[in-house]
Amino acid sequence: MYKSDRVIQWVSHIFLFVLSIGSIIPFIILLSSSLTGEEAILKDGYSFFPKEFSFTAYEYLLNNSGSIIRAYGITIFVTVFGTFVSLVMTSLLAYGLSRRDLPYRNALAFFVFFTLLFNGGLVPTYLVYTQILDLKNTIWALIVPGLLMNGFNVLLMRTFFITSIPEPVIESARMDGAGEFRTFFSIVLPLSLPIMATIGLLQTIHYWNDWFNGLIYVTDPSLFSIQNILNRMLSDIQFLASSDLGTNASQAASQIPSTGVRMAIAVIGVLPILIAYPFFQKYLVKGIAIGSVKG
Amino acid sequence: MITEGGKRMSDVTVKKVKSNSHIVPVAKSNTKMLKFKRFLPLFIMMTPGLVYLLINNYLPMFGLIIAFKDINYAKGIFASDWIGLKNFEYLFSTRDAFVITRNTILYNGGFILINTVLAIGVAIMLNEIKNKFAKSFYQSVILLPFLISMVIVSYLGFAFLSEDVGYLNNTILPFLGLDGVSWYNEAEYWPYILTFISTWKGVGFLCVIYLAAIIGIDQEYYEAATLDGANKWQQIIHITIPTIMPVIIMMTLLAIGRIFYSDFGLFFQVPMNSGALYDTTNVIDTYVYRGLMQLGDIGMSAAAGLYQSIVGFVLVLLSNYIVRKKSKDNALF
Image 1 (cartoon, rainbow over the protein chains, first blue to last red):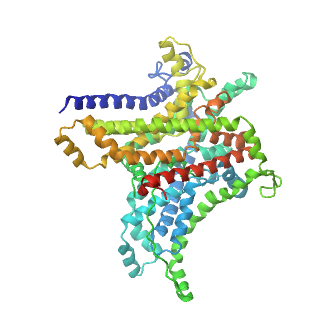
Image 2 (tube, helix red, strand yellow; image 1 turned 120 degrees about the horizontal axis):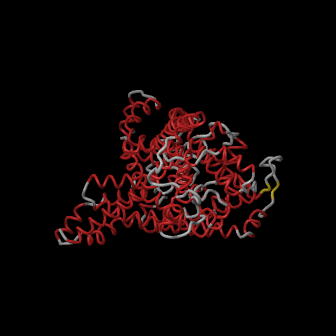
Image 3 (cartoon, rainbow over the protein chains, first blue to last red; image 1 turned 180 degrees about the horizontal axis):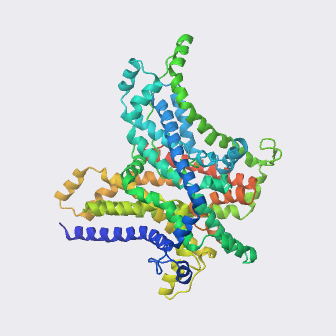
């Protein structure tokens, strides 16, 4: 082994180690701040290790858990329902497009593909969903706009169907008298679990992390997801910082959860993903790579 | 990929499958009927998805015409008066148009350069690590920031940058003997802060793509090089990098094609929508959002949106044209 090879090993280890620490540090500060007493934070600021260990932030959340639990429920519903519908719609459309004998196949594929090249942007989309479909302040506003399905996933799944499901299999099912629906659900679907898992995982992360739909379509706090609650608290802080500290401001300040509580809610929002991460990490890496490697 | 939802998938490469559809034979009317009956179930299956694209993607495209209207909710969108290019005249007569275009291009250009170089470096290093456990540990941890939402990122940012309780002002700057900085009021620091955060959040994702390309390289090249006495460094320079070059070029061109679209969360959430920072944090996406949601200036906002859609479209076509010239297989279409 060359001496320079050993140098490369060491340099790689050191560099990646530092990078890993850099990736984790903010999370540690987040966790530590949520476990630090309020006075300690106000005196010394956020820190790595709680100087004054305290569960008051979490106790506060437990005692005022109504809106948090509700927000959690909304996040979970939106994530589960949205991901499920998304998978159904995406796979059904992709399956049709994957069939070589489908009439107007190219025109339909272009219909899907064009959405990747050009889009109307925020303003017309907002007007469509608020003025025509009237989704403002409904739970559907968190599920439908933008997130439910995208052309990219459809084309990804179509590629999978074309390359991984042999045509004779579908043909023989037809010969045996199975209808299209039956063929799809009892033959194609069981063979497509890997791509379903991959796209389902990416969709789950998108739904869980989404705050954008809540920001523009929802003003009713009872429909806030966890991300929207976090978002709202942050903008309240900014509102206070930018306004003169008059009586109104101090009144508003008393309604904003304390510095520690804020971090505790952020911990609660991010924890489920961090806990689940080791289990889905393998699929996530595969999912990212799949998008870049020619299908 | 350019849609609101698809935005998050934006960095991934799209691959088009070669259509092998055969020419549809000329059918007589009764066979046409039969064929219709035969494919009806398939069309029914596809309907929900197609309808969704129609509503979510195509209706807004036609809605772009509102940039040429004076929107009046009382009259309704379609009945509002046409005002020609007035909205665009307003938009381009302000300094805003210049600032948001400059910011969008400089930031995204910087992100592409820095994130690509770093991601390739990290991918190569990860590939060199022999210890299996260490390798998977590093990779998992570096990908971690990709998983969290921009709202959480802005909390993390706040923990560091808050003027009163932030880690920088309370711990690091005093340690270095420097005075605290009012981060959310000083625009000059934000180009560095935002670039740092973009890298922190995005490198893991990009690195996975390059690592997949590196792993795909035929091991025989390396074995042959080792027999010829090449050391690791020489192998990296002469085998790894040239072999993944097509992937690098393709990913970069695709990113350049999307240079007019920014990560809205990064520019909106992380600076906490602070007005004092607009000069260095306002990009086209945040400008459109503020016009629509905060200022109620739909005309201007729609004009900026149309400007983005059209220039964005041209850039996508252009970058694809260049990819196509380089390598037909890697082109989108």
